[in-house]
Length: 154
Image (cartoon, rainbow, N blue to C red; front, side):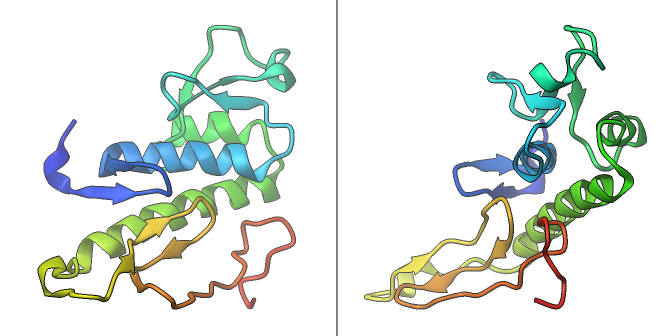
């Protein structure tokens, strides 16, 4: 695993970019759909394996990495979804990856210059991308289009 490429945060972990990309894609799939045919493996949450809902569609030993940049992986995941839901899933994955890339390109705050100004760290919370924010401030995001009934116009 190449950690030189940087680290990205989701709300619970700081991960190497390559792992962040597939982990967040797996979580997008898990969080967006009520009865997913696939579910993250307990020991490797970036790998999806058949859930109870997917046992008829996949063999017990089937697993797929939730990699939106790999056509074979994307097809395996999208075969469990309608065309619209496939688009929602891939849009969520792409948003997480874009968040990570944008945040890696943004310099970190100089923590030593902060005296009383504590701040919340940048993160991908599973739905949206939050940049660093001073404590006692609020950030607002429009409801993303990949959330059921979401609209990119907010």
